[in-house]
Image (tube, rainbow, N blue to C red; front, side, top):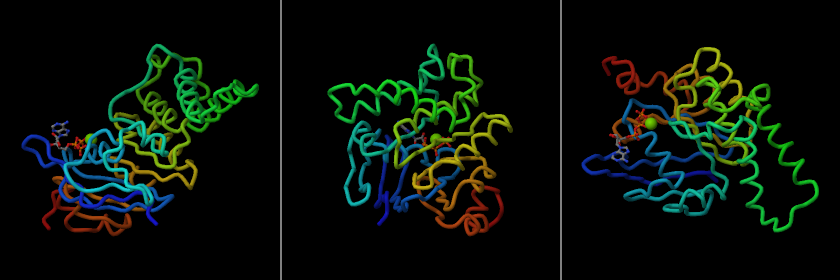
Length: 247
Ligand SMILES: Nc1ncnc2c1ncn2[C@@H]1O[C@H](COP(=O)(O)OP(=O)(O)OP(=O)(O)O)[C@@H](O)[C@H]1O
Ligand SMILES: [Mg+2]
């Protein structure tokens, strides 16, 4: 049974068909890359999956449950987390505090109307674990505004992971990063729990081939290829769209 499936999803903005009959199915634990040229509809696809935008038509399922049109908070509670293409941090707060808030927000959902005696330690302990996993523990006391651009993006990923999601959507996690920061992010992504299902929008092909076990290619709002990395790499239509090669 697929963890996530989209059936013939369309999204129209005034005058623009951003998504046209997009169907896809992602298995539990899969690491799926979504690639395609600028304006192909990749972020729109994420916005529909995460409930930020309603589709014009079509359906989205999480497991057996239909989640089309559920708002982002409901999707979050069902185990979906995402990062955005643009920065969404509390810049005046420290790295630690940014993650701590996300850990606390997650624990509040657990209907604990009382505060167990261990809860304080557990929030701090969990915060540390998440920061270590994201390679940011040594930067814990730094205000987020002092982090490098790449570290800020890694902090966003840490915040998304704080909620222990089962489905994580990363929108261009290495965009604007240095070579070293990209390598560090790829390592962090590679070390994510194997049962976490990952959808990653990424322009950097080295990163895509390093992390993805399946690739979906969007072009002008349509899926033009979907398969194993090696098959997609050698697909003539993909090469034409990406590399300007004749089909
Ligand atoms: N809120 C919106 N209102 C109107 N048009 C939109 C909106 N969001 C996206 N679009 C349009 O939909 C199309 C797909 O945009 P989208 O942001 O999904 O592309 P993308 O594949 O993420 O591109 P990029 O690689 O540049 O991030 C584009 O033509 C874009 O201008
Ligand atoms: Mg985008």
